[in-house]
Length: 157
Image (cartoon, rainbow, N blue to C red; front, side, top):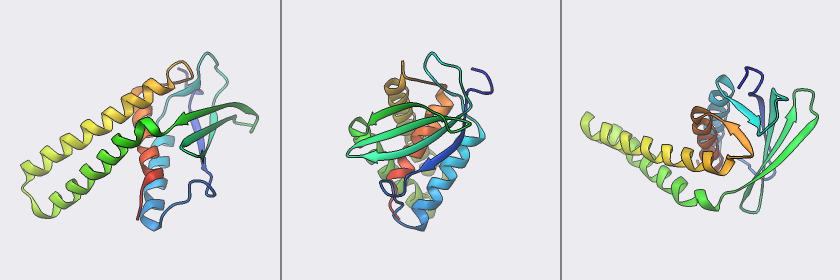
């Protein structure tokens, strides 16, 4: 992918994806910042980036509204969140364990939990990559950053 095949802006619909407090809002801002810093993204079979991404939720689906830099609508992609339910839940549970371990456990215990956390994150990223295949082209690092954003959209304070 060329350097133009990337996301340059992310907008979150606060009506359907409102943050559950300042901590959740902070997680979203960090996830968006990380995604915008480095990503590889394009609509499958097209090279009309860079792209603006608007995210909203309808029922249990995440709506990706993809526009060109000049705001011309290019594509809408709907991602069912049902396949991610278990992974996101497991990810939050292991993150809670990780934060508890930081306060109370030995470095080797913290490292073991962190390896498990990264493994679950990779599992979610691989699932996202599979679900986007043939529709949205990304590299694995971008899929990881998008999965982080999906988790941040589920975060509670």
